[in-house]
Length: 390
Ligand SMILES: Cc1ncc(COP(=O)(O)O)c(C=O)c1O
Image 1 (cartoon, rainbow, N blue to C red):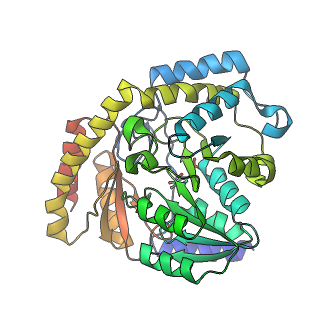
Image 2: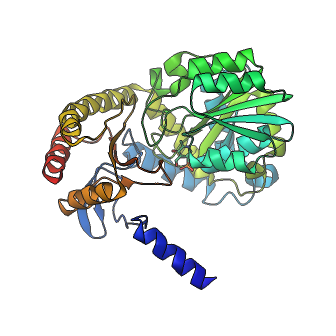
């Protein structure tokens, strides 16, 4: 086994696919000390810059003072605290704008929420239709589920698959915002197909929640959708600045998850203090401060794209359209992506090179993410460093 693993690791290395971790020594922020060195980061998903917000830090401290640290058990045994309950009710209140009779269920991570939702709703006898660019956690959920699976790459392809399906139950699964691309899925068209073919539509809003829509309510709010067929998953470790996730849906769907979803049942509940802090995070997202931070993200995004467009044109790179804080610069080869990332890092900027299998072979890219705490000077610094590195 060790011999085999060594050979496989060497083979990955030869393809420039070896990944390494960095050690962050200070709080998540655009300016962070990493491995003892100050860096300017364009890679975190803390889009609104809440991860180190004083109100959120205080709320976590208060939560710990009130509830202690560990939850002690799974939600169904004794781990479900008043804080978890309040968080779920608050999220259900938001979801009620898009989903009649909405309830919500909280999870420790988005990965688990996706595994839970897809496996519980995509059981035997269900046909699952999964978007080609979906996040790994959805893909893994689809692989684990007992239903049949088909992958679609466009609305037309999905329509044909649904039309041909004779399955008793159907589940469509998609990212709302594609995490390595930044663009939005055509959710209105997908929901239309779900209505027409009597399917549920599971939407992973990991990168939309907090960023898109009125009050940061996410992609469903952005499009103004409403249906009992929607199953809305959101993560709380990105724009919400903390950790965790939720699934919100019609009460019957949530009850089914509560009763049957293994990643919800067979795991210790997240610390109640975290759920307590997340209530403050929701206050920040929905309030005036959230509005201000979303406006700042838009300004920074426009500045970045204006600077990147001529650079991409000059070097034959691609800057796909983005509706969010994620701005990929596709430079095609793994080597080019790694070389650019290394040159930027030599200048004190961290922008990750994203390679297969995270993205399709031959589409390696720099994934630039913005945070409301970035300043215009930070974006200028990135653009200058990229021009030099190019
Ligand atoms: C689209 C998408 N879904 C789900 C997840 C998983 O969420 P979490 O990090 O909370 O496990 C991520 C990223 O981590 C993501 O980008």
